[in-house]
Length: 186
Image 1 (spheres, one colour):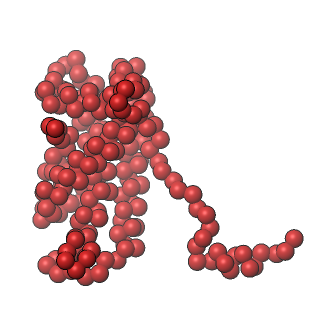
Image 2: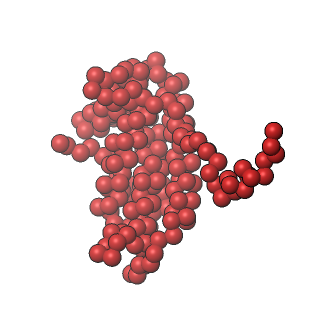
Image 3: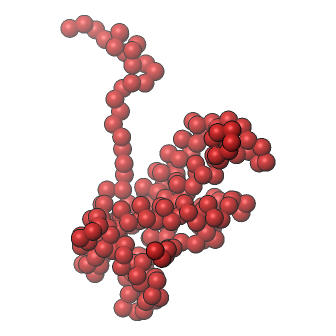
């Protein structure tokens, strides 16, 4: 299986707050995982395969493929950098050692502060969802010129046009029991 990368590590570092000391091999893996999951999810398999093929063959630079080049340069790479950052945070924060999962701290390790990582990931996810919404809006505006966007590949998925994910709050927070007890009886 040939791996075609839509974003290189150097450009990723330019677009996101990624330290030069961060392991490039790990970043390549993280970017590829984000590309395969998130970019394919939001482009749909047919358009995703089309972009990969154009990049692989070098035909992305041909004048007749200008709309795909715009998609790649102005949207896909930026969206991939944001989703790659979301995926990279746990890999930059945690490492697997013989002592278990540890948080990186220079040359030393200490127990991970899960709340801080969760907050950072939430902020990164919000930015990724916003950038994805801009790409989807552009794709919807240009869909007449990009037939693959509305195609459903026999072995693939249709494009997801909803970039925002929101979970459901069930009310089981700290004050849940107190709220139940303080409710007036009917």
